[in-house]
Image (cartoon, rainbow, N blue to C red; front, side, top):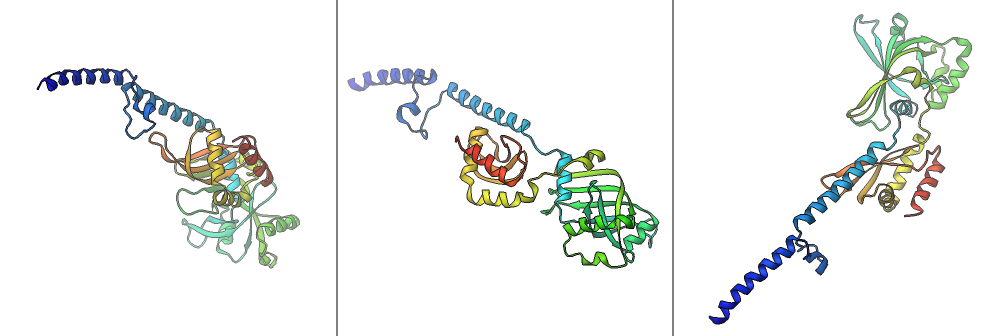
Length: 309
């Protein structure tokens, strides 16, 4: 009883002292033991950790808000020029006046940026255009699978091309449709948009808008688009570790399971898991250190970005 009588006050005193140390952050079992699982964090430590996470999130958001993408005009022009060369032509039906009609047609693009076509005089859409030449052309991205994929709508008028310049249009058309031998049949003629009054672009959810026609006609498509799929496949299959290093160096965050989903002359967009706050899985824009113009430069820039990691 004597020992127990003196032991209880000593135990209470030790508990008060240790509690004081923990609250003042003098006792940090994490630093002493090196184990995080059983660490004691003071109120101050929790606030510091929370503030640190918020700072990283703010820095990440700031970086992403200033990262450069293709403009909506560049995206639309790139989609059109790198499409499969087919779209839905909507016309005013000659057979059923007052009703619209739709036809899947092949097209190419001339040196002024206007879509043009090779139509048979027997086709229903040719008869429609002869009566009313107000039309629209809807073109989807090559990888179109649903509402989140890109598409372009062009509204204007179509007219037949003069016979004295058809040789030029024939060569343009065969560049895109190499097996279109039927364009030399006697009943086929070339038609083109001679006026565009409106262009609408949808790049996915919450990414849509009207496009200035003159800007669209003058704009150049992204030079990396023809090689983008092969570049992405190579990086995603063989160089995920490199993507992790580049993101850490230029954005300052750790990622897991990175996968490039877009690449263009300004940079790449990848999806990845981020263990930062409640961000989780998200898309990340990683700009290149300079604009690139061809496949070779993409490789050079990526190697350069990795050189100091």
